[in-house]
Amino acid sequence: MDPGEVRLFLALREAAHHRLFRHVPWLRQYLLGTVEAYAAGITVDVNKLREALPDIDMTDPEVALRDALSGESLFRPEDTPQQKAALAHLETALALVEGWVATVVSAAADSRLVHGAALAEAVRRRRATGGPSERTFAALVGLELRPRMLREAAALWTGVTQARGVDGRDALWAHPDLLPTAEDLANPDGFLRSSDELDISDLEDDPTTEAGETGETEEDGSGEQGDSGAE
Image (tube, rainbow, N blue to C red; front, top):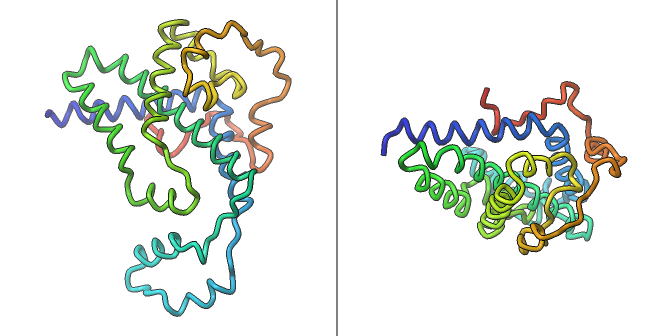
């Protein structure tokens, strides 16, 4: 496979992330607010941490940190209803982001890149297996981007595009209350058949204010993020 084709495909994904976060100014703070809502319930047993410090082998800091993070005795998330709800909201939001990106990139790449479909499948498999950081995060807080949910999100966005067009699809990002829920991902046909149009004028609350209760909103409103920094 031509390395240039691989680079172009990855650049398309980065550009799609960049476009989404730049044109949906509330999204970045919404995701951060959800993470902060979960993190607020995490407790650290300081006494056990102090007792464990002498046994940590700092000759390999990366391994030492991974072992510490994976140990429930040191960093023990409280399994509260609020944290379960925060994780569910975060998983759904991330799946919607990745599903939207996959749909947009597929529309742009399938007719232009010979191996576009194969590259998309490679990305999905990479998401399914995850790297060390993803596995550590999953062990620490229980958050996993399940491949099934990612496929469901991509299928839903594709269906919305076919039913409502690109503008109708992207209009759903106007407010978090307009977005599909986890139940909608499991039943996309029901979401598409729904005749109840949610009027954005009825949504009085500023979504960036809702998500930013535990953090500051970006002053420039650009909503850029680390892994979507394509210029």
